[in-house]
Image 1 (cartoon, rainbow, N blue to C red):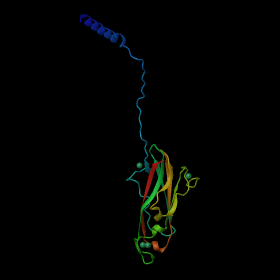
Image 2: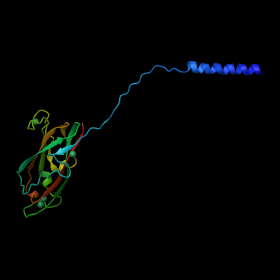
Image 3: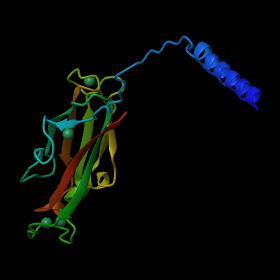
Image 4: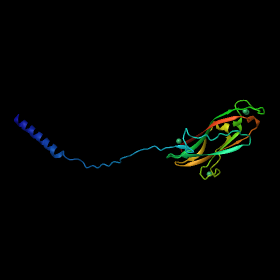
Amino acid sequence: MKSKKILASIVVIGLLGFALGWGTYSLFSDTETSSGNTFTAGTLDLKVDGKDDPNVVKYFDVGNVKPGDSGSQVIALSNTGTLDGTAKIHIKDVTNTEGANPEPETDTTEPGDLGTVLLITIQYDANNDGDYDDAGETIVTSTPINSLNSLTNVLGLLGAGASRNLKISWTVSGGNEIMGDIVTFKIEFSLEQA
Ligand SMILES: [Ca+2]
Ligand SMILES: [Ca+2]
Ligand SMILES: [Ca+2]
Ligand SMILES: [Ca+2]
């Protein structure tokens, strides 16, 4: 019995010695860290003559028009964001009413007739050189305003930080059927991620 105890003690001491003698080291290592990693979303921000809604101005308030009249309006679009975009235009909510119906008018039935003969031509100065007839600067659209109601037309590229002019020209044709007639509409400009 006594020799067994002594043997057990020797085993315990031996294990302790093993733990003390062989357990106090670690493997070499080396660690490096890349810090501050971030994703930040870019921006698109369209300005129409420098303005956002609700401050975009009314570009057309033309009264007393008659067959043969014409005019134009230049509008500057800017992309003050950090991403390139594609500029688009949509003449929408086109509404025709008869307005005044004098004796010589040949069609006084609602809706009014002016929108069928108010030709709208839209051009975009894609290369920003002040004219609208360079290669690739095709006329965006040239059609009676009534037909534009359901169409969104692509103007062209509007790069980050860039500003480009578009020109909206109009011509009135027709005859006595448009007397006193009124057409109202909105012009919606948009900038989409290119
Ligand atoms: Ca904006
Ligand atoms: Ca009328
Ligand atoms: Ca041009
Ligand atoms: Ca009419």
